[in-house]
Image (cartoon, rainbow, N blue to C red; front, side):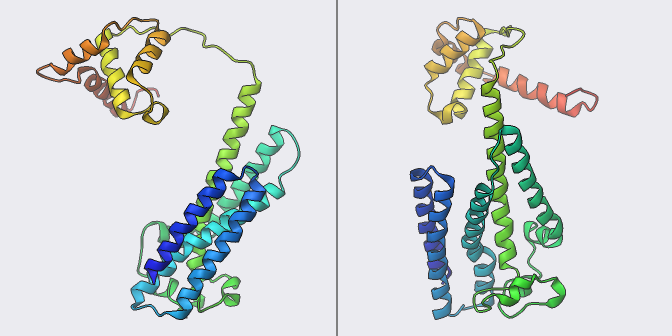
Length: 282
């Protein structure tokens, strides 16, 4: 049963990714997403109604780990829809205040559900038989009133809370991204401010070449799609330095008999020393 539900979730993610790429309007995107999520939830509900869980553990896994994957998406898109529909007209300052207030609402949920949040996030399992099995609810566990109105054949006392936690993570990320976009817009509207000083590379060319190859190997620029030559030219332009035949320099670095990454090692040691020095100013 769980395998079928997981397959449906994979298909749902593919559909949501397609919607995300094809639709720019956030409200329209949410409307389309909610529609296909509801269809997916109905599909797994039919599976549960027609089959029985083989073990208690299979039932717990479904309501603790699988069903919340679907419900959390529904909560997320519904919340984003409401947030965007209620978004005030105004400048960046008003929008920033609005999104920050929405973040505070998430914190309020966290504060109210702190005990269960800690249980879930810590990976605890000792109450799973009450939280994630149908008909095993305990009124002493501070149940929300919505549980008594839910379909008890497809709900447990806490599977919706898990979905809320997962959805809140997504909503928080969404709101933070909106705030970043506002901040970037503010910065772009301001005149470009140049640094007060020009940084010059005062280390050796060999050290810079070692750093160049390390950064390229790690793929830290443009998701690793930039050629080594482009990075080298950028370094030369930024630091106003001529690296010369840096490929030959790298061969010499590689031929070292000891400590091939001399400069990287020195950087690591210097940073660790700074971290260990409690009196050092950050």
